[in-house]
Structure formats: structure tokens, C-alpha cells
Length: 196
Image (tube, rainbow, N blue to C red; front, side, top):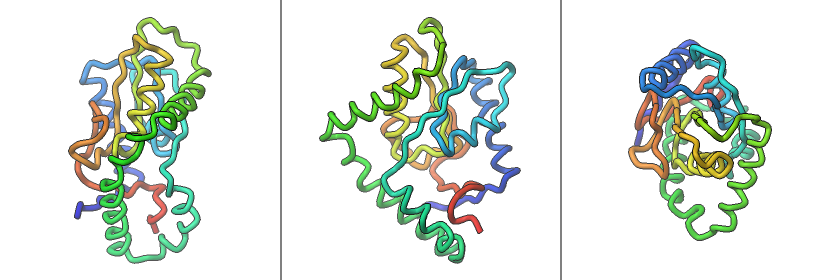
């Protein structure tokens, strides 16, 4: 099972700063940041770029997220070792089923892409010279990032699109991040439901 790293507020902010530095050092200068709410929003709020960057938040949740939110108080009272085990078990289960999602249901995928693309309409950026950075807290299966990337390219076909995350939890995903701070670990963020 993978190890679980707990980031307090200061450590999280340091990882966000490191991530922004990697983007800058990588020579990518985004003129639009698309964050995947909720975790990606926290990351972007703590990233610093040399000049202001337009930003759009898009929403997409895994199927079990609302249920985990309802159990948050009980989860927070469990011992850290139990929460680490539950987090690792969830990661294992998601890795087992991740290849099943969106592979046989192209219609559902198309609906998801269009729904995300509609959220991008608030941006007045022109299609020429679009440099889009998609930001999330964690990249697990990579399918959410893949959907958002597809929606961005549907809206801005000539855009250069890159992905930045605090952690890529797996070595192989549907879409890899070009910029990441941590790899192949599970992270308990300051807003995670199992933070006591």
C-alpha cells in the first residue's frame, strides 16, 4: 500500500509555491488557468506567477465524494492509522475500476466534456496564443484532467494545454501532469475530511 503524506497549511503553501516555480522554470507562461474545484482552487489561490493570469474554475466530482462529505465528522474521529488504511484502500479500489469508466460510454463522456466546456464560456480570451494551465490538487486516474483538457481543446482548438498538480498518485494515468510536486504517494490536504 502507498504511504500517506499529511500536509499542514504551511507545507501545502510551500508545495504550491514549488509547483508554480516548476511551471515558470519549465518555460510555460499561462494566460488562462483552469482549476478543478475544489482542490485545484485551493492550489491556484496559493500559486504565485509574475503577472496576473485569468482564471476559471470548473466542477467535477467523483461518484463517492458527496457520501464522504456526509461521513466527514466520523472519519475525522478515527485514528490516523485507520484513515491511512481507508485512504490506501480507496486508492486501490479506484485504480481497479478506473479503467472501466468512460471506456464503453462515449455518450456520457461527450455530455461531460460539453458540460465542462460550457463552464469555460465565461472567459473572454481569444483563441490565438492560448496557453492554458489546468490545475488540480491530486491526479489519481487522470480521467477528470483528461475530460477538462478535452473540453478546453474543444473550446480553444489551437491552445497549448499543460497540467499542474500537487500530487500524481499513480505512475500511469489517463493523462499525465507536466508539472507535479509529489509522485506516487497519497496526500492528506488541510481540507481533507480525515484531518482531525
